[in-house]
Length: 356
Ligand SMILES: [Zn+2]
Ligand SMILES: [Zn+2]
Image (tube, rainbow, N blue to C red; front, side):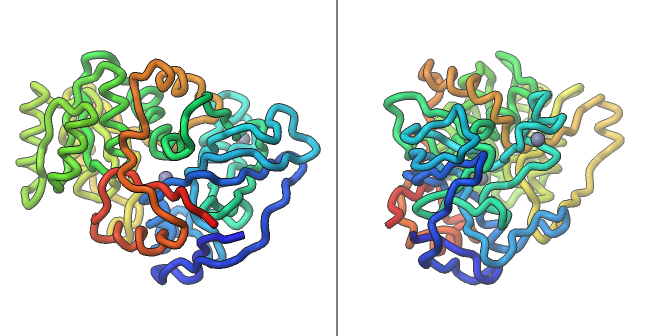
């Protein structure tokens, strides 16, 4: 089958033929119909993440936002059947450790990251293997397209979990979103659906226009301005600061701006992962956090066991993930579309829908 393989960090991915996966006893094989192209793929391609032992190695098939149809299941799989249409979270749990058993499978003690580890080859391919499929594969509602659902495997569910479980957003709260790429725009859209008021921050007018379309109540363009000016605008728009502020990019500036956007007792949620500039570390105003009793929280993906909450929101028509999709591309185009992310030349979500 055709697949996009990491051969050398920073060099174009190779589109080549690889062996089709067979299901492990607890696994399933999914024929990929759609897979989003995410900034996490770009980080993996660049070789980022070694500072947390999270660096994709050569030979890795990237791609971690698949939706498609189950074509084979292992002998020990009960719930998932051939023919099921599913989305798959990148944060794969084993379904049996204390974290998985208590509903926190996104931080499974023995988890795998789909498309980032050799034991979990990714979905920029005609087919992808899903370990522990009964725990990790999520049935899609009838009538939705794989293209629209691909972001459920990463950006859309990450935004939902960050806002609800980590940010504990309530109706009427002000939410600030720093960085309006795929996960940032998802955060804007879902926060709006949850009844929050949203201010979106980015340095590109096109991204802010899209944020406005997706439900932002205010936008702040940070291009060429220092953090003090940007966060002053956010605090003014929100009458004293955001209740919840999300760093959806992961560079030092957006992280610090997010923290400085908070009101007293507000909550910062870190979603974006850093680059080789920060190497996982950002200087923060800890006394300000202490004096304001503000929280700094991390968020990673979403527990597979919470998908039903997100799907209910989807079925209520309050959210439409397909509206974020700005472009459908072929597998052959993936190396070039990743390269376009280096200079932030992509807008919204791009999804691979042609694999052969
Ligand atoms: Zn992703
Ligand atoms: Zn686990």
